[in-house]
Length: 178
Image (cartoon, rainbow, N blue to C red; front, side, top):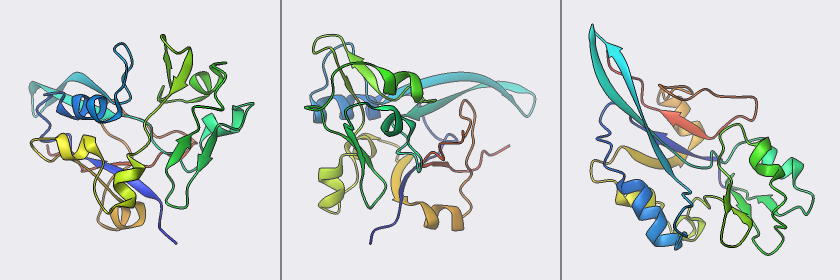
């Protein structure tokens, strides 16, 4: 049985280029106006000077996904590796999952009137490859690994712009340098 997968993100070296977003959009043919991966920027003080830091985020593939628990059509399933997958054919566009997700990962597609979200590129994962957002990053600050391995290696659960909620998000961070 595969272990729970988690994204590992290194805020120390992200340059804010949006390549992760673009790679995701191209691979998944995401409509204009919908983004499964988002890059936010924050200005923070580190060692007495203001610096810009970024947060690349998508679906957190939570251990306890609220999107799945509130969906009236049971459009969400959780794979053995922890990836939370949505069956688009079952989605009726009610939006309950959008409101239930503390990370605003599910997005309403204004063209189809249905909700969409990151798949973790499970097709690539199944082929032993990294998701497209990871492959698209020119500075290699994003990857997906077994969550137990990341935790054992000292990854942290919170970072600038990100708070871990009770859903137990499968997102880890390289500890910030001071």
